[in-house]
Image 1 (tube, helix red, strand yellow):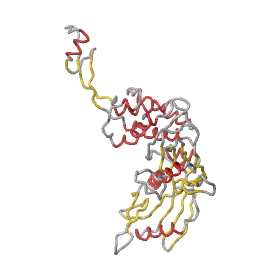
Image 2: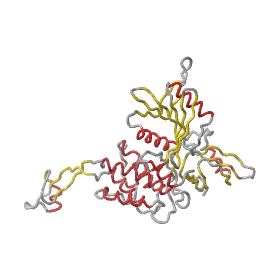
Image 3: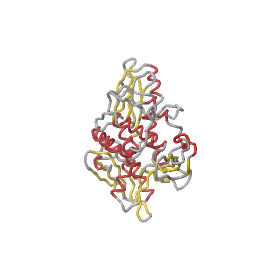
Image 4: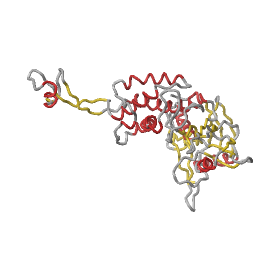
Length: 379
């Protein structure tokens, strides 16, 4: 296993094929397969056959064609990562071939956590329902007589009755898929024992839903799921797919998954801003025109806070440890955004161990750097 930490450079021995495959996942790659740019830099080191690898903002695990597993850990403590992924925000799931489930930085916890938070959300909104044809062989009889079933069961006896009717039920194909994944995840042990508790608490939700014994290949080809089911549906298929099956005992194989931590942190900052300023409107990826004349150039601010229909502040999410003073490039960026929006407040927001802030002024713009504790997350 190749064990890496996001944004930290590590020297690793690689074959030529492994180096080529990882090179296709670098930011400078011209690869056209739409794979995520997992690696920031990959360069040969002083020793033959070794390379310096710097991963980007992805956390998770995937397998190389050679069979070696790449495990990328978060730069933050695991419990912070659990808090960040447990916010109810959506994470990008990317499926690969089966990978080792042993060692590394708690991949099983990440997968189960992603599934649990989505399943809890679906349960809170209520499981989707559909009509199912039911055969009623005992009173009270509803629906219409079922002649064939009556003949098969009672030989057409006049003193017996069998009817058929449509009943609204949660036992539909979509929920069976989710229930099957829940059953498989419930068999595993996790570093975070609270996950096991949350999985057990979901069991009554699927009590009247039949799962698929052999996983996703037994499931019929489903129509695209409702929007609210999209994330949990993709997670369930990944968990149940025979090519990416999670282990039922001591792990031998696990699903390959990568979480884009930059996007997840942006989601958290947006959630945090809305709780801090409930009376304001928070826009994400807000377009800012940079030029008044000439070719149109538009930048996008991570978040703009608006009151009374006018912008009042701009925020940029930075997924790295808090630093007291922004870099020169960051100062220019924030000052440009604030000037174009005609606001007097701009801030960078980082994950931190405790609430910390520093301020400076640049012209008529107040620039802040803010550290937000992950334990403030609302689950």
